[in-house]
Length: 531
Image 1 (cartoon, one colour):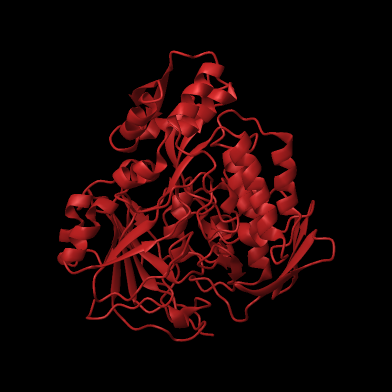
Image 2 (cartoon, helix red, strand yellow):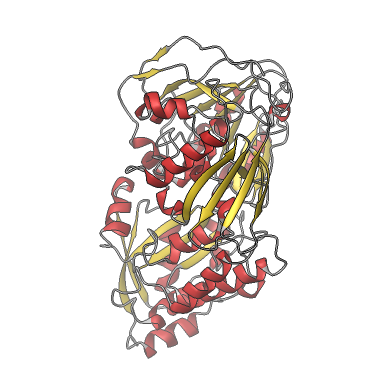
């Protein structure tokens, strides 16, 4: 394998975004990196390495998408970052279109008989984009950093790891403190993205803006809050299926300017709201509606009155007409959902498809039983009052649940709602996780960020533990996950509303995109007609 040669250092000046600003979700994710000039070092080398094949078909793919909070997977603070981070990093595993872990840097793996040790077998000839060999020692260093670094935001996902052993250059054994069959799924996201040991040793802080991984592309220039430009890394293990020579990320356009951005060629692919589907189709662009793990939800602190009375929470769940929300807020795109997993996911239970049917009479009866025969007054906190919150307010009002909307800045939402737990009723979206156990921990765990009540029923703890102890290939695995889902939906106060598909628009010169539940991937995607 040829070794990539170093590139020249590039100075990228900070700039004001050339396109429209992000909405509330993107603002939070990008705020941490806004402002200041960035000195972007070589990010690795040229794309001269060999990998899974020569690949390539030329052209540039320009994607309107949220940039990252950090290009270092260990310090990235937003789950949404996984989409962009997957361009520059690879893990031992990845997720297929249905969110099942499949081989990536590792060609295979196997557990020992009692499920407390898993051995991964690396593909041959792997390197990072800086030319450093990607061997077992590099994997060990990267995973241990994620587990042990003081500033690691993925450490909680690696607590079951007792020791990482480099058996030989191509074999990594991970010894666990207890049985954990979820590790191949957990390592498929940013938790398991492998970082160059040379970069860790020589410029660890610089990884936030100068990533060095072994993904399909390598970063060549970056302007926070504006854009990132990447070139194809021919050393990627699956390079034969990566076709664009260059890949550019830009701040996503607002809905009103999405068509213009595509027509001008400033973007080749963009995500749009459902309200714009007909307009972009009429303009001659291709629209793909891709199922995703994003679920709209009302987060409830069940330890704060009046939500500490389960009858009040159930009244809310029955007072919401989810189908009407899909039709009005999402223009009919998406599915009514009473649970944290969408259709097609192993954790989605068909039994729960009408768990809390819209029933105003039942909602009023529950309120009366809870001591509120004349209705109840609540405050619903939101970071964006228009749309969903207003619809929820109107629907709950019909059941005698009088809702006052409180709008807070998105930048304060996590602190106020989930850390200080000062707002017990909040509109949000749950973006899913690589492992269903991760999802349960975040949403329902006693330390779960999106569980403001910080309480978990013993039965749910036992059900989640059973998932961890069940091999992914076991025929009973889906039913085990679904059993935990059922307990969570019936005992926890979260009010799940509907799924939010990823609506992607592409120019006609871009081939069909893969339909991935988790992170959007670009294997097999081609761009024709020049750069």
